[in-house]
Image 1 (spheres, rainbow, N blue to C red):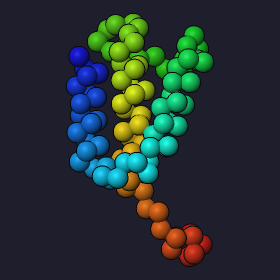
Image 2 (tube, helix red, strand yellow; image 1 turned 90 degrees about the vertical axis):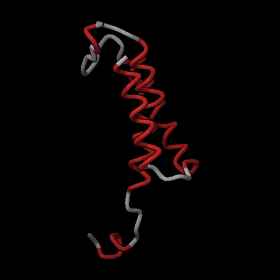
Image 3 (cartoon, helix red, strand yellow; image 1 turned 180 degrees about the vertical axis):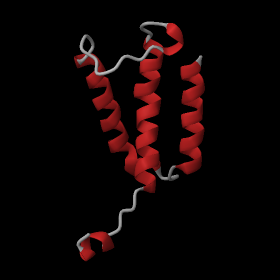
Length: 93
């Protein structure tokens, strides 16, 4: 239940703060979701951290919601607010 509420809040935040033209960020969103899914598959037995929502030791629903909703939407919001200006590179900073 907590994972569903967090996923809905991610969707609302992405619609509010993200750029409306999400198609230019779509490859990056797919790359992030694929990388997260690949990590979950390869490091199944040797995790860096363990997520235990609501006391349940292992549940597939929070992992799927993180892979399919949380990571791509966070990439969308981050890249839509990232300053892609050339003036920083011209100044040498």
